[in-house]
Amino acid sequence: MKKNLGILVAGLLLAAMAGGGIRGTGRTLGTITAFGSIFVNGVEYELGGAQIRINGEPATEADLKVGQVVDVTGIVNDDGITGTAASVEFASDLRGAVTAVDAAGTEFTLLGQTVRVNSATVFDDSLSPASFAGIAAGAVLEVSGYRDAAGALLATQVESSASVDDRVRGVVSHLDTAIFRFTINGLTIDYSAPQQLEGTLANGALVEVRGPRAIGSVLAADKVEVLPAVIAAAAGDAGSVEGLVTSTLAAGAFSLNGQPFILTASTVFAGGTAADLVAGQKAQAEGRFDAAGRIVAEAVVVIFDDSARVFAPVQSVDAAAGKFTVLGLAVEAPSGTQFEDKSRARQRNFSLASLRAGDLVEVRGVELREPRQLRASRVRREDPDSERWLAGRVSGVNGNRLTLLDTPIVIGTNTELGYENGVALDRAQFLRVVGNENVKAEVRLVNGELVADRAEISL
View 1 (cartoon, rainbow, N blue to C red):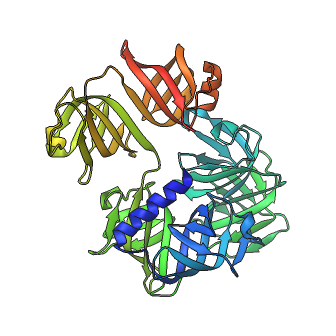
View 2 (cartoon, rainbow, N blue to C red):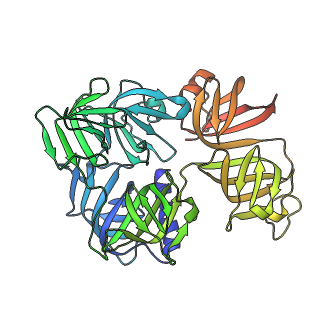
View 3 (cartoon, rainbow, N blue to C red):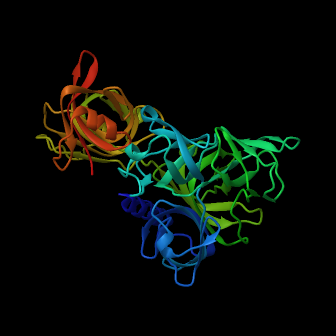
């Protein structure tokens, strides 16, 4: 699934760039989506001769893992999809003991940092099970991901760690040089003991901190290193960045992971529009560095990691606004949405304007940022049927209810539960492991609530 996501993003970029990604010497920041040698931001980089470092130490290709966020310096060939890496750097964002797990929010807390997960998060086999269900308070984990503007980390990769040292990357706040302390979100850093300090501390600076296991909410630092806030390259070099929007689009500029981008009249979009470049939105953008260290974007791909499917009757249609509703979900149908009529009517030139309340449709698309809103990529009308179902990522579990496409669904004592391969689960087992999993639930309305007759976890 993770490799397919990388291929999808690469395909969108190729379509946007009309023949290939950004070519030439440059920098790439993004997640490893596959090996052979490594795929990052849709480019397959050969690693023969590349210098590889993990957390500052020399490493090999075998030490790299899918889901890790890496910084690649190298050359992209003229085909736009292959290249050669001169160096690959990986540094985890967090390493330490989990202090809390929030099943209702599919997130956990580690070293005072909020860590969110989604469908694209890769859980290493060192976890048991290798999923969100494998995370428990007290477990020592290492996490890679992208920080949002508020400091929360969207995890791209999570694995167990045997290290006795903690590490955290984040932004300095509440710096007090008199008592040698500052904070990174909910973690206090004490840098008063003999340690290695590289760079000048200041509020707002990006730092990497290492030290022995934190005691409560305090980490006594052995090393504090001030890091560059952005990647850098020579003017004219290529730049490709995947991450979260940390500075919302304004006056033609926005930032991904703090890296500034400039839009022009020739910037092309895939997967969304410039209006989607709001704080916290995931995206991939590429172009060329200007003399001010900004990247002038040639292509931007808006990424919605969580897929969505619904099979139910249409409730209302607003063709002028390009929307319709189904099971209380507002569905956008932008230009390019595929419409098919598989009902007995077999209407030619079927479109959003053809939909009517009561039509049974299957919708495929993605979840948007706003609750209970989807963006359709395909809408297919079917003949009347009594079946109703939703499919997507479970974003929370609370008692005997799970949240699917921002919709509460009751898991009853008679709900048939299990995996899509036929392995059955009892209700307690199902509710314990279903958080953050992709699930298809057949539902019916009972006393104003959606109750699942059957729910199965995708493999």
